[in-house]
Structures are given as structure tokens and as C-alpha cells.
Image (tube, rainbow, N blue to C red; front, side, top):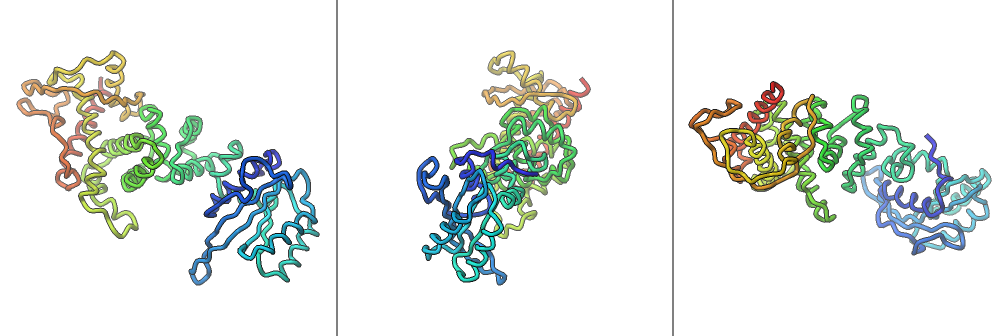
Length: 411
């Protein structure tokens, strides 16, 4: 697919050069002609940056690049190319000099550059013409999405969403998610692509209407769950550094955990969480205390949501603050996000509640015998990642979700 480079204004073409170079792995990028706007002399600004390349013997060489951005309505003149290359040779600290143009360079100009290079080993001369830039752009859908969003195919959009999330922690838009959902069966998914989509739907409160967890296969569910839990500490730190809250990330992982308990055997889920780092190439695994610290809030919040929603219409429980009719209706649909034929808007309320467990009354789900207190009222211990403790509390969560789904679908 061709990209309409000539339709970009000079300022935007310069920004395209900057972001594309950043996407390609250049470091310490900076404008050599500072300030906003276009240089009055040549209609473009220069960029400087460093690029690390791997040699055949695996050694790493860091090159200093000098990039001249030339926006032209016609062919870049030979005299212009000659002048800027001759000027560049005066800089002894430049290893590679590149010309980045939205148009083309004539064959005689290319021949002159080759002859010049034969007698001047340094700097190495690179010319990226319109067709070169178009070819490079196909490898970097994140930059394409920023400057030519309408030109991306759906698989390229999904790749761009993945790159944006893992590189900049930005979420897909509503339109992007709706299009992905409508075409989900035709796309090649993996955990790194699905996780940002689930996080975005968590942010939008749509996990109960676009039920990703119910339409993916077990392998993709497991991959996405593990990817989220393993990367949770690093993503949370980056979110805090950017001034963003980690609540959306946490809610997405809570959803994945509940879906895994709904669909998978309990022992399988416990084994996945306890041994999550065995599925990576990370040689040093965090100690149990750190894993408890990471996992505790997720399991605690899932447990608390089940307690609030399962006891809402249970005759064993009473004395709770009065909530609005709208909140009552929203909470009554909490378990619908686990049923494929029911739609539910996400409930993010966290209003405190006081519970009195009347254990002389029968549990409507037949989960708790008469005379026994409901296990949902037990506190989640801080050592939740110990295998026996984890199995106990995930078992409580799993039984509640599965029984509630059966009860709601039968009602």
C-alpha cells in the first residue's frame, strides 16, 4: 500500500521523520535546528541521533547519524544534494549522513553520490526517497497509525495497538476495539495483542458486553493471563511514572483470572499462578513475598466483588448501606459477564458494606450448608501465593462464579 507522503505538510513530514526514526530504534534524537516551524533556508530541519548495530561477531557499534529532512513538491535537485553532502563531510563526528525526502532523487544524482562515496569512506551516505520511506513504513505500523491511520489493514491496526501499548502504555480507541471485535475471528491473536484490548474495555466498562474471555481458546486465555500477571509490576511502575492509575490494569487482570477459574480446572489455574515464571526465560524469579505483594490486591478485589454481588440477593445476609436503584440494577448483573448470552455494564463501585451472615438460612446456590458461615466472608491472607492458601481461596471464587452462572442462566 502506498502512503500519501506528498499530502503531508512540511512540518508534519518532519515529525514523521522523527517518529519513524524513533520507531526504528534511534536513540538521543534531537532537532539540530531548534524551535517549531520550518527553516527559512531550505524548508526542512535536520535531525541527529545514535543508532546501535550488531556486527557479524556480535559486537555492537554505535553510529552517529545526521539526517537532513527535505520536503519538496518536485524532484530533489542534484545541486541541493551535492551542497548538503559536501557540507556534511566537514563534520568529523558524523558516521552516517542521510537525506530523508518525500519525493525522488534523479538517477544522475544517485550516480554522483556513488562516485563521491568511492572516494570518501566517511560519512556513509544514505538517501531515503519516497519509495524507500514507504517500504520502511510497512514495518512500523505504530508510526503509520499516527500519520496515515486510514491506510492500515486490520492486522496492521492490531499490530499497531500492540506496539503502542507496550511502548507507550496507550490504549486502543473505541472505534478500533469495535472493529477488532467485529472481525475477531479473522485475526491472528496472541497475548501481547489481546491484553491491551482487554485493558481498554476495562477502562470503558465494556467487559460485560464484549466478552473476550468467552470467545478465545484456552491457550490464548492462559497466555494472556500469564503475560498480564508477570508484567503487572513493571506496567504498574510505568503507569505511576506517567501519572496514570493502575486500576484499569488491575481490573483487566481480575477479569482474566475470573474467566480462567470459570473455564479451567482449579489445579491448572493454581499451577499457572504459582509457577508463572517457569513459563518465561527470566532466570531470577521474584521471592514469594514479592509475588504475594503483586497478586494479593487482584485476588482480594475479586473476592470482595463476589462478596458484594453474591450476597446482594441472598437471604442469609442483611444490614447494608442503602444504594441507589441504578447501583442495585448494575450490581445484580455482575455475574452476567460470565454468560455468553447476557449483556452487563461493568460495575466499578466500591461502596463499603456491612454483612451479617445468618447461617441458619439455606444458601440459594447450595454452596454453604446450614450452620456453616459463608466462606466469602473470610479475609484473604497476605500469604495468598502459598499453594495451599491460593487453592483454598481460588476454589471459593471458582465455586461461586460457576454456581452463580448456572443459577442466573436457569432463572
